[in-house]
Image 1 (cartoon, rainbow, N blue to C red):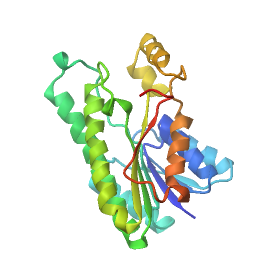
Image 2: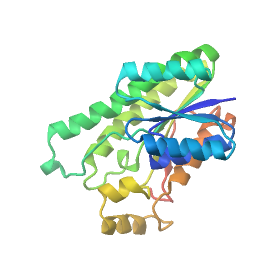
Image 3: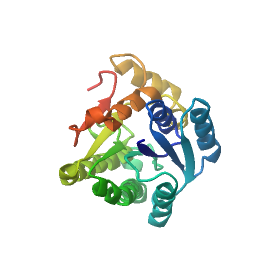
Image 4: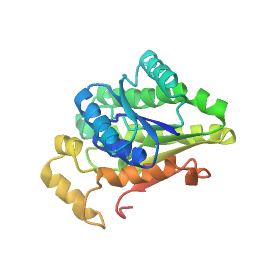
Length: 244
């Protein structure tokens, strides 16, 4: 049975992804840093539906934390077959005029540091088995500039290129690496960061006339985690309702 690790598994997209992968027969590990109650709720929902899941606390920017988490998974269930890196590192919404280097540089550092650490931790096991799926959460502002989203867009653009290099290097080992890039997603994060009137304007600009839902991203992630996506690697896949 395939084992999937979802970083940020207590968040909206992470939770939806965990449930979707569990429905498709994966054993699911939900990583969290602060949202223990939410992670436990997701585990409970999966187990109640007949799936297998566990939650593990770890800071994905701390190599020792991540190594301990991967070792615990290895000891309890075996090697990780699928990594879904959904953990959201904090960022500010700001114009360049009001932006400090600490805000931009801090987001760049945490974004890439987390992706680097978790990838380093899971790739050796995947290489030893000659198979693996690496899936990373990007965002449309990485390719489509949007007012106020300079920190998110710049850091995700760096992540996009990082993943393309990972995909190139790991392809001969049977490991795929892809990016999923939703437009603004309904839920707690959008509600906290984006005013309601701005959310309405974003939805109006999307051909399907709504924001993305966590399940929209989760279903795309589930395809990339499947055997059917074994020849799909190095791709940036928008989940945008038709928005270019």
